[in-house]
Image (cartoon, rainbow, N blue to C red; front, side, top):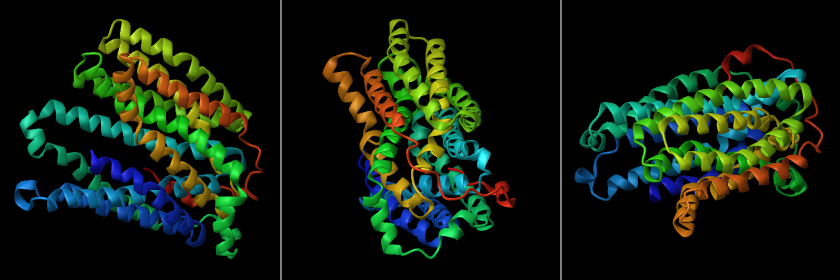
Length: 383
């Protein structure tokens, strides 16, 4: 548990350091550094000797890997989002920005498939002995491919135009001159991160411990819901390009808030694999609408010179406080109230926070200039 949690504490550190690096050295340089650090950390986890061979040094190696993972992840969302939005044509910024969340959804989908496959194919003893390493080893194979793609990206024209500004000014502007943008971004991320860690990450545990369903059924439901989520996100991004990000965010958070409690209550009244799939898919479809506009909305809160820094600070503080501890919070809520509906109330809190933030979003002018699509569109970064 400590190894899992420590990664979230490193995210704000990585966010600040890598965000500043991206705003000074460029989006391309930051994206290359991030994926190299992530590949290194995956290698450490996949190849770490067992406790029997190294004693306390074995879990310390995993702890080091989680520190690197948290540090690298801290800069990924901001750098990749800034890159996507800045290469987009003026009339496709939301669609391009939505690809960030498509990448996250696909990553979660592959993770769910990996969980489903290894839990069904291996015995508990095999899973403990070596099976848990297989998803990390698969992730390790992706690293060189991602590094190759990012090495052949071109820097965004929007960033090149802002290059040469005073570096100290970048630091002060990101943390002081854009307080409203930081607050709006923080609120929007709270909604998204709570939803991700409860509706996607925690749901298999909830289905097993509170609803009495098998882990296999829970992972299968998760896979279906993530397919729905992945399909909806770019459609919502295209919609946001037509009507604006704010209406999409306001409408989706309101619908999400109203749907959560009835959905959880219906699932709890008669738990089944079918109901779990329907509830997760329905909630993910609404969440997909929100995520379709989310990335571009938060990117547009900041001017180009401080975009990565501002995004990284607000994003990672929200994820650390409300996403990383989501499973702890909802587990405590279930035991404290004696109600299996406690997770719904926590996600409703996130939806309400996102709704308020959405009402105040879009007040900042968009970045100085958007640029047309170029050959780099064939090498979009992913998570």
